[in-house]
Length: 103
Length: 190
Image 1 (cartoon, each protein chain N blue to C red):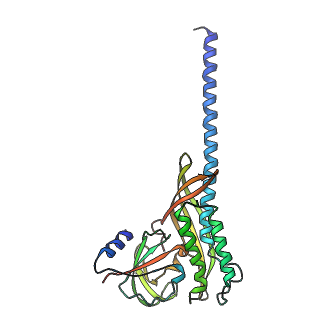
Image 2: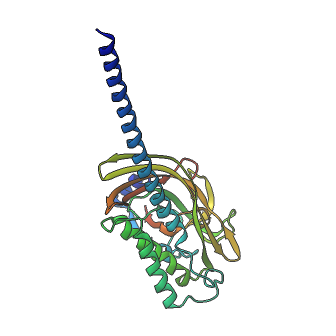
Image 3: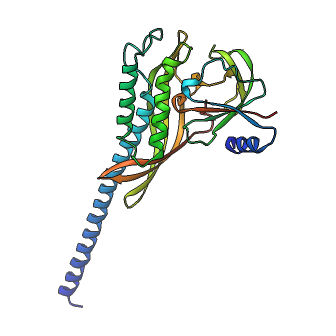
């Protein structure tokens, strides 16, 4: 489902790719991101998006206490989680993150 | 039919039955051995994926010291040689996993954040099912994986149960992974 959403946004004239971040580039604060950006997670670097969330701003993640750029998401519901999800993701080392701006 | 003939037929039937049982027994024994080999390859592959981002001591313990290039380079070689034990050279998974893990190691030097990998592994393997087709096999299993990371004075141990589908091929008598797909089971994702 996340992959279909990614393809839909990328095929939409309003959608633009903000960037792709490998584990070596996933700093806590990502100044390229804006509230409303859609963040896609590819857990195993196979080019298929496995999960999505929405960037909401900057601050402190209430669960992990990470400070940086934050996202909200469903499935595993998270409110203001650190955007790269490292403290929650056992597959952090193989996760590639792509961000799309839908506006 | 004479008693002698009846006994002879009974004896023949008994031997046919015995041969069938023995053959079924051998097939199961062979298959069990193959499944055990595949289980070890799967476990080795995912254990390595989870644990290889961890740098050797003392670099894994102190995030305030820069990791020298020769240590990173040695670790890069370790990632390449370890993964080759489990993944086929022909597999695109080998290439992308090697790249990801090397980047994960380098991230511990490159990022401004106070971050280190403290290892990881496989907690449990469940529901392993293997379908054979000659020298190829498709194996499905649920693996509970974990990682341990250090960030800004805190330790985090994310874990999750994931459903994997592996395609394997036998190369020189050894099973190797050619394709690997997974996703988190419902409610287990980050």
